[in-house]
Length: 134
Image 1 (cartoon, one colour):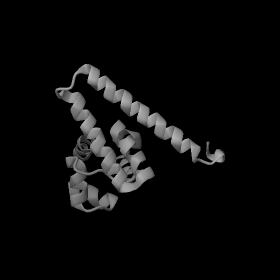
Image 2 (cartoon, rainbow, N blue to C red; image 1 turned 60 degrees about the vertical axis):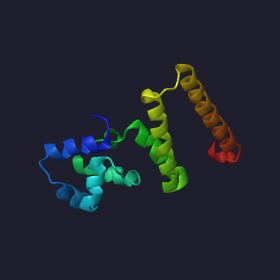
Image 3 (tube, helix red, strand yellow; image 1 turned 120 degrees about the horizontal axis):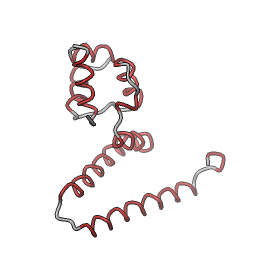
Image 4 (cartoon, one colour; image 1 turned 180 degrees about the vertical axis):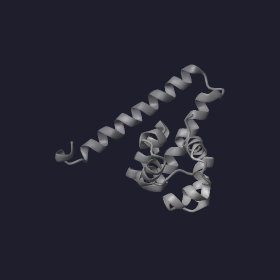
């Protein structure tokens, strides 16, 4: 089980709770909670994940996937717009690797370009970070 929605359904089902009961407990609307379970939305920040983890008595890391960790980091750094852009990037890359018409050599080239862009951005950010934060 990998997605947040699947995990929430399993946890809620094991406790024989309704979506409304969970929503009330974590102080969101039923529609918001439903969108978490359906995979349409994720909590906006770590506090949302923490509320879910506390309510279901699980480690917050259990609720996160690698994608969600990355998307939360993007949201922390660049806001909700950055999170949406990062999510689109993740989906596009997943689609490319899942079975497009791209050759293995081209996939390798894309990954190398992504890695190069990452390291270049990290290097640039370091130039503008105060030494006391390094």
